[in-house]
Image (spheres, rainbow over the protein chains, first blue to last red):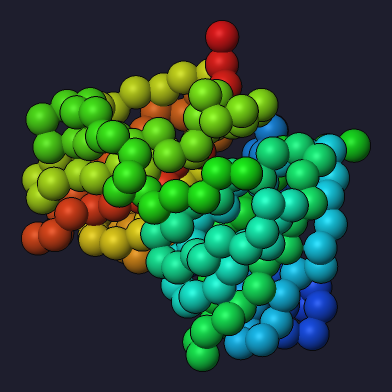
Length: 109
Length: 109
């Protein structure tokens, strides 16, 4: 068993204004999926993209939008987002504080 | 894509003092794993058990302990817990407020 605080995991800069922490990954022995925590600074966003795997997202703090093929939807603390495989998506911080969310993905080849 | 607030998902009573919400599950189209949110009232705990699949846990609020084969470890907001397959474990609320955590599991037969 591994017990930690998410801030103990080293962050990597995915993009300017976008930090990623892999708080549970394969090196911990996780066999199926990876838990990451993203911090988006105000005004920052993830790129619009799609891929063959899903996202399961839980918003911890901040305000933003998730942009999908059907338009934008507001998200904030305690929002849950399921992004199915192959759907175009993007997360953007529209608030004045960090937008922080958990994003779980399966391990993919 | 599904966007919701976790409280919009109907809760089931797992045990007295233990509520479970499956905020993303197979009925949403999730192909690999399920995101649940648990609420443990003060003094409540999950049963000590083990199973062939892992847990990936993120604590949203409250205080408690995770009890494993190696002893008890304190958890609180922003704690991350990886429970490997087949390890005995139990979560207990040791605080005065609800202990709320996300627990992601793979779909199992």
